[in-house]
Image (spheres, rainbow, N blue to C red):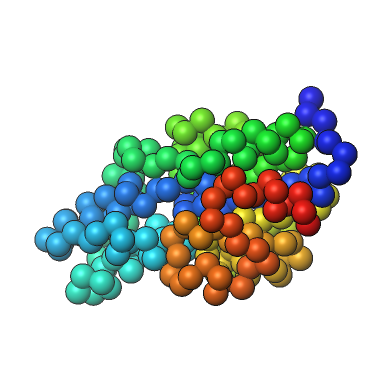
Length: 224
């Protein structure tokens, strides 16, 4: 069993998924573009799709349609199953953990810290992605956007994370205002990653702390 090392100030560290743990932009952009192609729309670039990520796949599709001419009639309802089917079949073609993440997880594990994922991605998709990348078994709990019936920026998923991890001081790492708001309202220190799928500079998200690389995570948490 893992043993909590004396002196480390956190028992739990939670992470957002897309844009925080894993760079999923290329695979998500491919899924959006597949759906758009069914309407004869021109593809979006990965850079264009990045800011659309964060509130789940349906929102991402809605944003993609809006950016390419709007959503006629029942386009979202018709195309959403096609987007999901494509994404499930190509979920980890290009998606990879961000640099330094595996070493940071190793360091947290060595300290007996429980790690968890709280994402607005559907739980089954989150588990599939994390499983294919060899990260699922490292997480004490995985909470998706559909797990509780509410999603970030509600603080409920982060509170549930702490409860599922048997309590203790927690921190949360994310890349969006939704992550920061959820952590703040849950009373949990927030860490923003500057390399995520940002819709504004990381310093403007209102997080308690910002890191530019996962090499900085353990020293930051150690100092708090």
